[in-house]
Length: 150
Image (cartoon, rainbow, N blue to C red; front, side, top):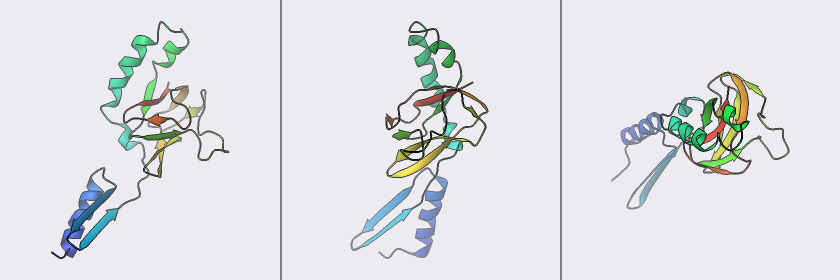
């Protein structure tokens, strides 16, 4: 079977319309791989699975310290993917944000590296960073709270 142009265009459309970043097909001696570079913006953060993590944290946190309880009342910024959290663009650079930093929609707050791609995570809301929940270089899961904004 020869990979026809129409077939390749359909695959490219599937790649563009889904969250996939790569499609690979092999047919005997022929193979094709379609890839797209993705920089994640604020849109994928609006995932419904993220709020599920919010109730779990305050249940155990209020008794630990009074200072951490108010921080849990902010709006979470969650990881849109599995990867590695980085607070700055490079090891010797200043962090994108710290506790107390003010952010507005579109501001880059961190990077999540997934499959050797650096994905900038942007804030969807305006406010002040009240807690950063993960350490630099820590592995994060899809939907995991990275930080809270009030």
